[in-house]
Image 1: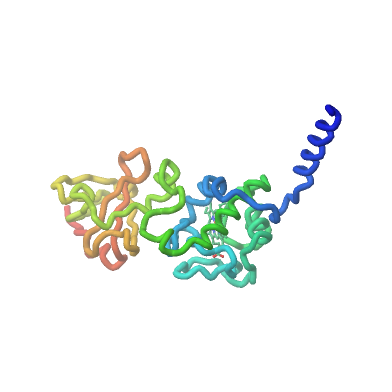
Image 2: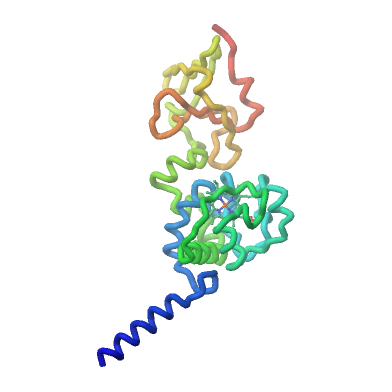
Length: 241
Ligand code: HEC
């Protein structure tokens, strides 16, 4: 009897070991959603929301380089002819640059086959979600929390800025910007500590009303000034001492 149990256990272990290390075994999408944190600095799981990389909402089953509205694909990925399925994604997550030399995606290779399978299962699930389920503005990916705050300041919704965020005037004198906000305060920045950005998405600032955001968690002496469009920038700045 005891021997039988041991034999069964051994058979079970052998079964586990014999599982294909590639993509064919089913992954766990719920775990994959957690592992997606690694991707969320650069990718959103919400449709039509692009960051450094394209939205991965409908990527499973598609030809590479065809996510609508993403305009920063590398030529090599565009011309790769790859179609995203279990096998190609499995290779991609082990080394995007080995698979498509010249791609602009940087990723520490994911060596654990189970982790790759789970992420792929999650991507597959995203692709089958109805757009209504994943749309609605909010990130459906785990983009919140610490990672979200550190990695994706550009996804902050600043379409309705507070008076402390809304910039009413910017003055430039010698090496200093003086930024006045709608709450009446004026902050001074060394010119090298103020970064100018644009956000043309629905989450971006209202036209003609740039927004001041602290850069990074530490707050302090660095900030971003976010405009709706590049056209607004220099007209907004008064050079005067
Ligand atoms: C540092 C930023 C970054 C990280 C982290 C990252 N990606 Fe990417 N990803 C990109 C960029 C940029 C591209 C476009 C590459 C190109 O055009 O060559 C891309 C492209 C892709 C594509 C192809 C999309 C298409 O439309 O063909 C897939 C699939 C993908 N990434 C999956 C992932 C997954 C899954 C993770 C997490 C395990 C991840 N990426 C992590 C930046 C990133």
